[in-house]
Image (cartoon, rainbow, N blue to C red):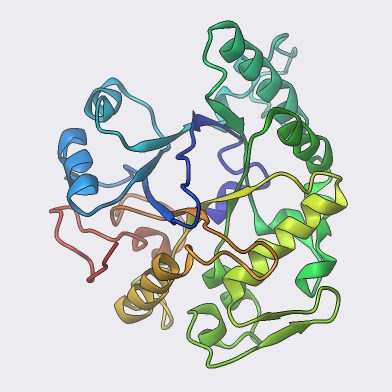
Length: 309
């Protein structure tokens, strides 16, 4: 989620679900930081029975991969930050306990891309996941990469060179909570009309999701990588844990997101590939109480609230 940092799930390798023209593609992130969760085979069947077409997986294991075999689900397969140094062609010498840095991301991406090509698997797209904190600028047309995203221009240019998308975790909830001036209706897709008019591109914004995505697109353009598409690799709203985290608000946001992604954004009309965070409420997650309540389903597979895909 947004707390993963500037290279949130720093390196992501996966089969990114292809989007037919003018048709939205909705996936759901599959986290397992909870007890009494269903088996992987049950989870795959729950995806399919609800018409969910894609899955993002954070923890790879044989049971999950076996359950996915033959499922026809699109897959984003994460490689965690703790494995990043091992993915470099020439792993750096580090002191014990040191952590990978953002400067390791691009060399690791190139190494994996080269390995996939050598193996005849060049159709698998290599990318990295970021959050809105790597951008700055308002209105959306003024978006650039921030100091926290200073490593991003060469990554963006590399993605353009290999035809891969950028994965972006887009959370209007966190932007709303961090900016008191934002109206909750703007964050929930329920504003009755234009909230932001962007004089820089002449576009009108009626929801915060579009503004955040288009700020990211502007940042890519500023890095001379405007051809790179964005896959929204996480987005969601918690159903408990603070006064604005209610089942009603979570249902409103996620249903409106599902209904919206086929339209695209003012800057980039057309279908968006997006992944809702998350499939299950995860009671073992740390951090704020809201972190435990992003799920569409409970541990017993019952809906946390009603959603139609």
